[in-house]
Length: 296
Image (cartoon, rainbow, N blue to C red; front, side, top):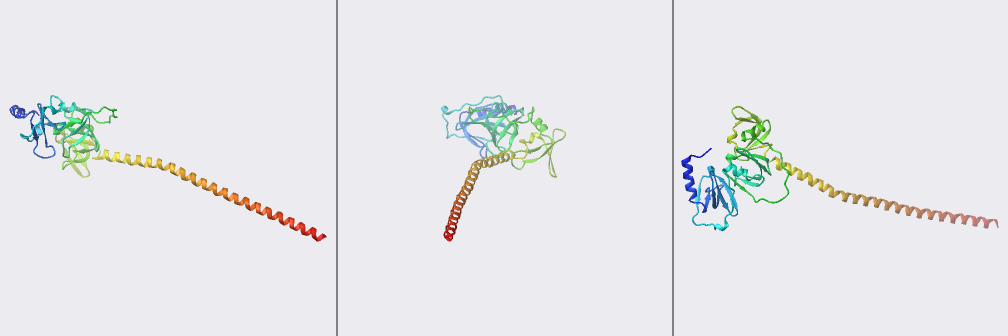
């Protein structure tokens, strides 16, 4: 939705007067940041916070305060992304790790894989693939690009717009929003007039995609639980493999001990046989000697 032309002109004059100066965006809350106003575009502003650029969607900004006592040297200025609008800006960050919103329940960090006309696809650690309604994104910042081996691209749904994503998730268990009182889970069912129904147990909710901030397939936090489960299985497997040589060593020791005992018994048995044989020979000679002695 485009802003009123007169208001836009007023906002532009107001902001351009502070360009390059130190300001505070929002007076409080998780989105509040203080930095240098680095750039002003049609529907977003760029705030340099230390060496990072945070891009705010202007329609969500509730207040901007100029800090007249603070200054930032022009030599410390960081380079900003240039885009036609906020949605175009997001698309330019594709395949990079981004921070979506600076705080709050809808704040997520992850790899940006794709964008549509009014949504973006973010791979997160906790929830896996999450589809965010770009209209509700308050701010975004990108991390420095790192040269490295490309990771395997995960599977996800794609559509022209956010409504299309909902259509592709029909009859699946989904999580609506990341947190707060509006976060719900259930089976998504199609309805008329662009509305959808979410069914969970005996509760039935009617929802409209425009008001939804984010949606993901599966239970919230399922990706993290699955990762922890895989790590546990991997740890048990490694532990078993490490224990195997010890078991084999102990088995060899038991086998060697048994052989040693058998060898010892065999030696003792051999000694007894020699002793018995020697005793028997002595007896025969003794009897024979006495017999001959008797005949004389």
